[in-house]
Image 1: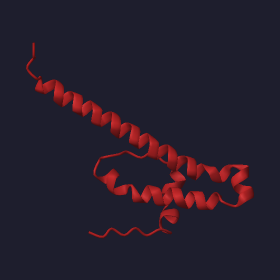
Image 2: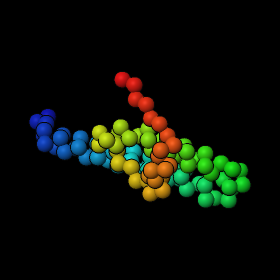
Image 3: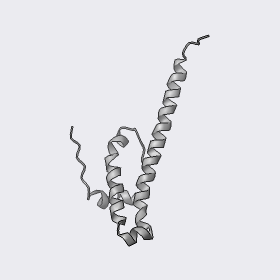
Image 4: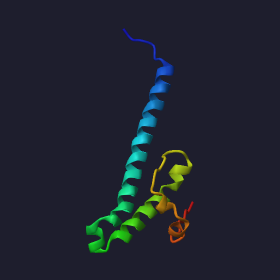
Length: 97
């Protein structure tokens, strides 16, 4: 009636679930950052003058997520221009422990 638990199936199942969650979270963050970064190219953003603000938001999100990237919790895929040292040098991150 009751089967014995299969520890290998539990381990593999948990690992698969974690990988799926990690992939979905990474894709969501990457898409959000890329969307904000790329919005400067839209005519509406240019007309409203919000393009650089969106790029600054994208950069701050990217920098804020770096601890999760370094710990291996997520993987970010972002535009190369965002990673330009001149862009990143305009921001300062502080971590208080």
